[in-house]
Length: 364
Image 1 (tube, helix red, strand yellow):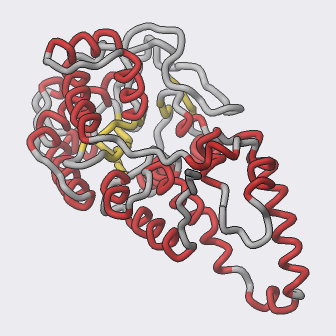
Image 2: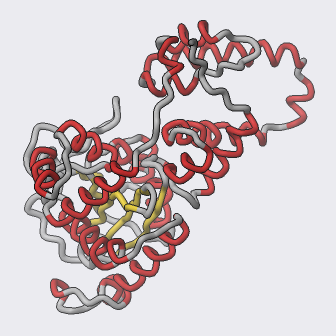
Image 3: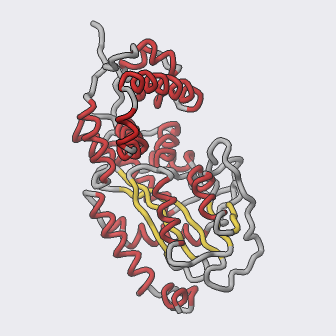
């Protein structure tokens, strides 16, 4: 019996994309609600955000153009963009771009343009199982306790807890979570293709004042169902959290927005440090620093202590807030994390700061 690929109407796609953009539920929760794979929801969300600007084009210009000419030009542009997409998108992404109900371009032609196998369209993937989500929770806790655990040790530990897992599965889950062991290795965070990587400038540098060095990082935040990602910008000298942001996907924009908020009050660091992840090596992110004359520093590969202060921040956050809660919805997580950051900045004394709070030191 032939298997047909499930088709979704534009109205349905728009509805799901809007829910994903609202960010009140994780992709796993939306996948369960709408019976769509989380990866596909993420793609619809990305497409919707990219096309929002088109809704605000000058209406007078559109009226002057002939509708048929516009239609022909649109199809030509779609074909050109899809040919270009073929060069950069993964097979999974290419499959998601195919529209079985497209009125003009056949499925066979779309597959040719995108470089995907037509037979692969009819495979219906499933989201992370409850068992995988449970394993990810365990991995997150053990990684927070022992951040030097790689996939081998993590696999051994999970097996010792009675979970029959192999290294390949654990490695994949750790990749989804965006974590890897903090020990010297050939490759650590991966920059995007063509992105510029900057040298690490803080070796041997004594940090003696506020706004001398800022740093940023992303961490995985578990939820009752699914997970989200958290980014924060911190002042090294005072440990003051300048800004933070939460996102259902590990995208670039929420990192850039967090950076803009940190810089938005006339505060400028002399040096800004990050890892070599694609979010932080992107031209959009580094451009915000370059145009303000801020020196950029990036962690060296396999250097586990280059961004140690923000790693300690994640550890404190998870033990003092995340692991004590079981957030059901993203707004709950956002409120809880926001309250903890306020406590951390304003009330929580630090032994390394002479039992002063970060706010006392940063704000004077």
